[in-house]
Image (tube, rainbow, N blue to C red; front, side, top):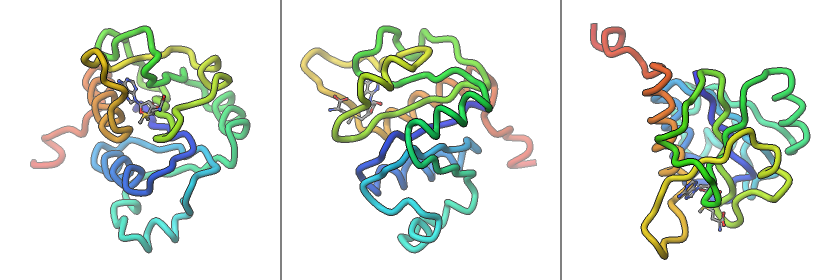
Length: 159
Ligand SMILES: C[S@@+](CC[C@H](N)C(=O)[O-])C[C@H]1O[C@@H](n2cnc3c(N)ncnc32)[C@H](O)[C@@H]1O
């Protein structure tokens, strides 16, 4: 099952949308801190994110801590970036990939860009800056789950 990693999130509503997406699809989430708001389980619950009890969230206190975890866990780091070279639907996903999305305000720094095993792009019309980060996550997770046949099974949901 591919994972979603969120780099230093700025906007609680976007994180909430991505956590709900992950809960519905059964995708584990890695949150790379610092975030611009309190990403503790308690605070997310208090802000009405009742879906979070259905998603496995791991918080990493820094980029370095996340990278240490990834060395242990394995899996490629697949960065979603407007500076990507590979259109996301042309990329071949693996079940243990970690799909990383950047900050709403500034994407990711060069160090993170350089650490990625692949940099993928959702092609846009000329002159368009970027998509919303939660929309990006939805499109890429959709394609990666489709390719790896990791969507929840309809037979199990509606037997
Ligand atoms: C609002 S964008 C960040 C914009 C930021 N000013 C920048 O220059 O990167 C937030 C995140 O959404 C993802 N994203 C947005 N549009 C994308 C696209 N067309 N292709 C791939 N990723 C995209 C990237 O992960 C990006 O870091």
